[in-house]
Image (cartoon, rainbow, N blue to C red):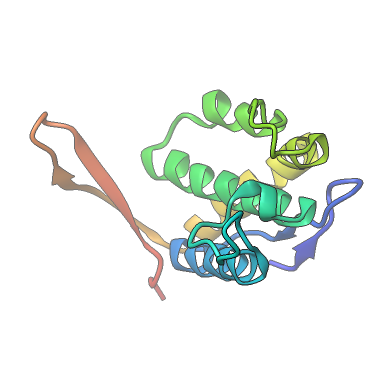
Length: 150
C-alpha cells in the first residue's frame, strides 16, 4: 500500500505490512536513532530511546505498533475495539527527558487508526492464519500468520 499522510503533522507511512516488513522498518528506524545518538558518557546507546527520536520517528514507530496489534487482533478474530483505541492517546510517561512534542507525536488520529486496521485486514486476507500452532504450559493455544501464501 502506498505511503499515507493521515495526520496533520506527521507522515503515517506505508500500511499493510507483514510481520517481517514491520520488523525490518522498525530496525532501520532504531538503527538510525542509535547511530546519531550520544548518551551522557559520550557513547552510542544500543537502544533507540524515545528522547533520542524525532517526533516523526516516534509517530511512525507508533503506527508500526498499531499495525502489529491489528495483525494480532485479526489473527485471533477479536480485540481491536479494546486495544485499538489505546493508540489514540499521547504518551503519558513522566520521564522528564521526553518532551511534550514527543508525547503528542505518540498519538495516532482516528483516520490513521481506521486506515491501519483496514490495510492490515486487506493484507491478511491474502495470508493464511494457522490456528493452534503452539500450546503453552498453561494450556493457552497460539495462532500464527503465514504471509508467504501465493
